[in-house]
Structure formats: C-alpha cells, structure tokens
Length: 90
Image (cartoon, rainbow, N blue to C red):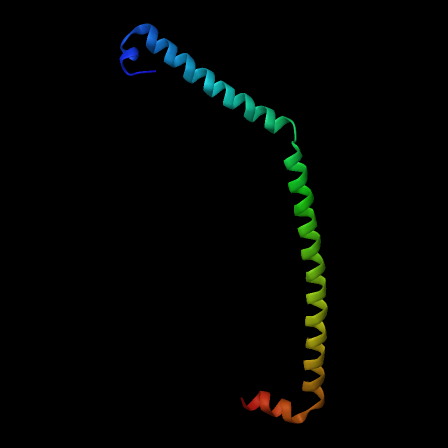
C-alpha cells in the first residue's frame, strides 16, 4: 500500500487489516508447529540420540584407557625406586 493511501481512513483501516491478518497467520502457524510434531522433529531427535549414544560409548572407552594408564603409573611408582626418587626431588 502506498503512503498516500494511509492518509484516508479506509486506507489506514485496510493496512491495519492486512497487518493483523499476516500476524494472525504467523501465530496460527506457530501454534500448529508446537502442537503437532513434524518429521523434522523426529529426525532431529533420532540424530541427537544417536550422537548421545556414540558420546557415551567413547566416554566408556576413554575411561578404560585412563584407568589402565593410571594403574600402570601407580605400578611403576610402587615398584621403581628411581621413579619415586625422581618424583620427590623434582
């Protein structure tokens, strides 16, 4: 709508109606998207669950590696006097 048309009451009213209808259409669509889960929601949830499971599996492997290396270091410290001396002096 041109700026000149808003100088008249009918032009102002029709501009208001256009904006109101557009706003209501957007709000209606947002409500529909919130109420009904879409295919994209299901795909996103499935992908995020897959990533979470992979991260959990990597965490378990890292934890095993850390515990193994920690036990090796503990064994070396307990059975090697040179390592103990080096740790105390340095």
